[in-house]
Length: 141
Image 1: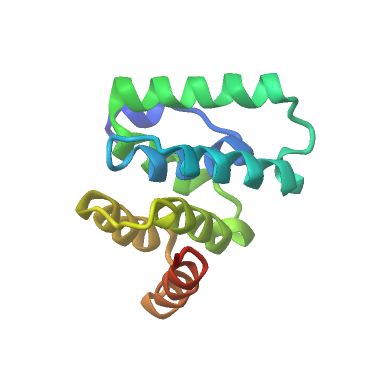
Image 2: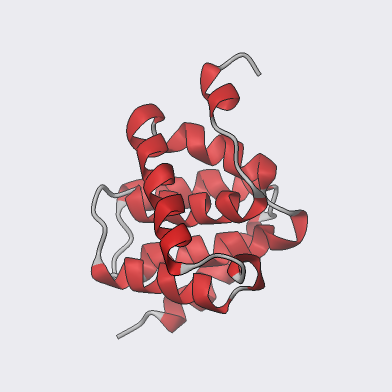
């Protein structure tokens, strides 16, 4: 990897998961209340974040947002998909999809992000389509 971004961003598995979720939120340039609620609820129920206090989660998200501002979400996503545990790749994609669909709309930027994300995570188009279909059903109405 010749890009300097990959050398300056260092993520734990939990931070990588959070980064993917945060990139999904930031993709359309707007952080909707429904998106931040999903993020908090996801962190609260996951074993991956059990050792994180509310303050440490907020600090982590602030650091990740700073990375997005400094280097763009593509650089953060590139590192995050390399650091995420293999058994959480489908989960990360599902959470990212849930977040992007939580406002009831799929902006062009969000659709492009989901396409790039499932490819980067090495998920099949079939699995990605199933996850998207379920999240569309979940977020209807």
